[in-house]
Length: 393
Image 1 (spheres, one colour):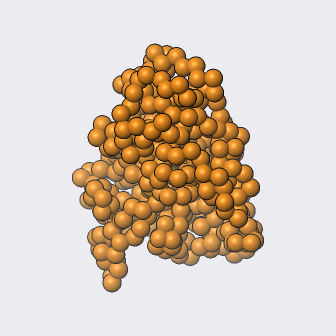
Image 2: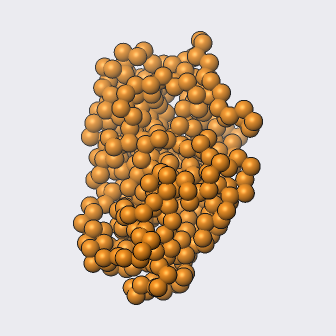
């Protein structure tokens, strides 16, 4: 089924397809849910963690191409879900889904995809698709699974072309929680599962949910914080009414400039009040916007669990220049050339030199583009949670 040449002629055995907005048709075998979904096609270079990827709200409105050819051997389980809200709409893989062989598995990955309403496509030359994305940028597309093999290709092309794309799209309002929540989950341990948080005499962090991953809150708890999670559009007055010692700005999907229309004024006001702030991914980007920088849409984005990031700037001491292996998932980035005076770049990507961290002079406010909670390295970046909670007294 897989071929380096994407042939518009439908193979006899095809039960799924990926149709790009430029008219390219990529055939394969569908799995998971049936039907169709539209989104931006990206690629992720991680070898595993696919269940976490598919449930990460930062992947909302995206179709993930896994570059690692064998997906499924870990299976699926209820502990590795990052969020109960919308994540990736579908995925594309090289080989048929591998049967589960991990002792923690409770369900086959293909069955889990079906239960979650997510569409999969196997039998695709994912190397060729990845090269296409690297050359031409992340395309808009429709992924479809139809067991009887009936596809209206002109209609699918039309749907892909009419979808507006992620630039200018505020998706945080679609994936944020609807109401305030006192986070009670602790950190995971093998054989014990997730513990319960201890709130006694802990500094209070209010976490603004723009499409957060649950493991971020668990890491804040592990670092010694009590956490209250609030919706993306929570007002400054309502945040301050919770009497926080610090405010966390979460990851999330979509264009930071669009979400920033309502989030940035709140963040600016918190900065003016010298509130300690820590942002991850989208939260990092909106902290930069609040400080006066700009963000930009990336050509292909950074997604995977093996991205090297180097510490730069002042204040690192003997760890100056140290390289962290990080997990990333972002299609927008802070434009380092627009960082105003008083905003220091603290981390850069060793893949392309793009900004991966900032700190605001005279404030207890910093952010990183990558995901320290995803345990790359595996613990290269946990110090960031300790740093933030340590600021709160």
